[in-house]
Image (tube, rainbow, N blue to C red):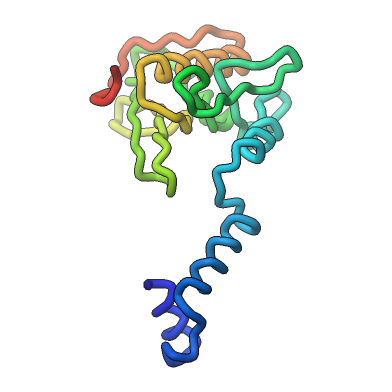
Length: 184
């Protein structure tokens, strides 16, 4: 209804002159799927992840995706969201990952998940650090299919692998804080 009434206000039209709500909603959904890529088609998402897969040649600020596993050709395996093949994709930049390249006693690694960031309510796991001045800095976001211990472990393994590729060092953290109330 919000879109329907907004059309009336913004274009100065009477409600009777506007197409039916169903017609407007169909158009909005069509536009969002085709022009804004607002959809959940697994093949399209896989292609998008593969196009942005971390390879080490990116600039410091270029967005990259990474997963915990790859096929024999180096393409990221994202899974399909089932229990046997969970969906997990990490998003970050080299500059954000480099926030972990400080002495481990000088930061706290935070891991938390929320489901309210996207339309389909896929959990988004936020990994970040807080420094001594209590500033929070995002390191990576992971879109996952479930909030279970195995997914959290896989996300941290993927982040550790990318950190090692960037810095040639092992990821070491001394303090970790998480809100894993749904983790099994």
